[in-house]
Length: 107
Length: 281
Image 1 (cartoon, rainbow over the protein chains, first blue to last red):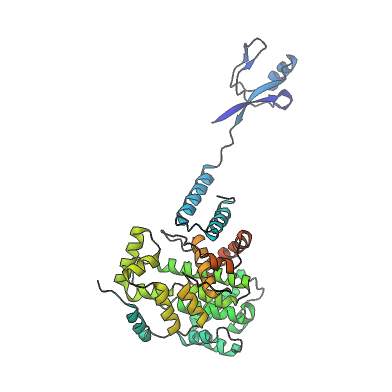
Image 2: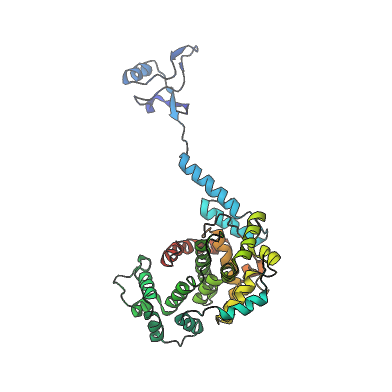
């Protein structure tokens, strides 16, 4: 599972979340190690210690590999279709329009 | 390998079987408004396969007709006289040539492209205020010379196809080098022999190189429609390639990015529908 750590205000931390990095105290000592699962009891204790934010693990938003592959194939097909580029203004517009039509954006 | 000359093509179109009578009538009626509905109905009614096809189109969800269309006459009411005419013509012409198998000619792809060009040409003709059904026929038939050549002169045409594949060049370049003429010239001869209207004959003849004229012609329409059908990859041909556009034809059609974009979804939607109907799916 790929992901990264993001500092979340303690008010937004929910039980069940997992620490994405070590929680350190003011002197740099580890209070809680990375990977600790947050519980209600733990949250109470952290609030009492006036900890205001926690490094929380967030999953990386990876694009659907199937969709990405399809898009890549569509792009490769378009590049092949337009391999003989006449280079005039009409050729350029046709190419741009069809790329945008197929891929939803300009080439 | 025996070659073929343009003189031989000229001579042999005279001995080709004629088009079905109904198509012959349709061709001559093309562009005229005074053809009677009865004549068309009678012509179609004699051919049960055609009747079935026409009714299939008229009853398809595409046209959103509430009540079932059960006669050719009703189909003409639903689809319009001219549209039934071009459909019948398409159904007849697509069955006319049967190139021998085993030479790598993709007949289904050929007609998928032809139907795509026909629909693109119809949309372009509408856009510039020219007759839509003449556009359809010009688009459908623009490459008919290729089909005649591959059917009647298969071995030498196989050389042309091999050269195209080997060098990744446009088909008319390989044709000119190997045959000494191209499919647009062969198609012009055939379209004239079939007594198509002069504007369609010219569209077939000039679809790769429209003349620099003042007003938009069906050659301009066939030229751009051909490129659109290639660009939309409608034939799904392995070596599909978009040809370069003639800037004069493009300008006479007054096309730009937004107006071109607006045409594409309809062409694609109609394409699947027509291919299914004409069994080129």
